[in-house]
Image (cartoon, rainbow, N blue to C red; front, side):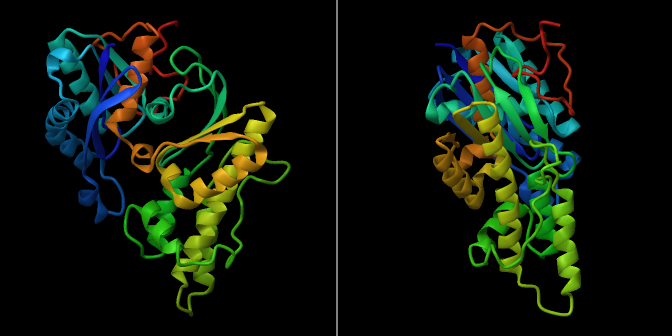
Length: 346
């Protein structure tokens, strides 16, 4: 079967994966997270420079772990968007270089399609129809998926402002917790009471768009609560647990409604926030109660990685989808319409 090399550099992780016929042969990951921590968020130029240093060693590590050489690569897939402009450019340029040097086809893929595809490496092919909840630092979307390689992706709803992961980072900063905020809040919330504070569940009233998200107001509600109780020590664990509960409740409510309304018996939960323990647990509970099959990748495959890009490239190759030209341009703000960033049918 064709062997696909995948390269991911949309943010601060330099990920490389190698996949053949739905099997992950090897992968490698470098992160520049520590370099961004003192700024409280990712600095694009620092991330791009780190990718330049890491991409070639990560490709070599992934090949070594797979036990293959460059001559065994049959296709290259690289994230072409969305993401930080300079960071995406590094990975896409590397993908073009490897494709040209090896004489193999190039696929410029959509980052979010990779998040959806990565689950196939652990749980096999996706069903003919499913709802996907993609939750990350920059994206929160409910999607209706068919054949990921061939069919258009239908957006049921997206975030109107802050994504869930972005809200985690901002609330962590309010609480004096380290960056990245998601894992920090997840850890400290284990010692808190999720019912201690009733934070709002945004966009869940009967008149709101049923599948749209908004987490900016929730973040502001946390800030106002802290300000109101400024003369008292902040119960960090309780605030973290209550905020996390509001996010998990909102995400899973809307996901279950989408499955019910669109007659989908499978929910795919992916993206960095899918690694959150409370989000995963509440999704499991509600999916079981609704008779919906829940598919969630292991936590290490939820965050950005090269395996997910190789996985979507593998689906495209096996579906005989036409590859991209080497003059493909990156699109840092690309909307997810399909696995390939550029629709060749247009």
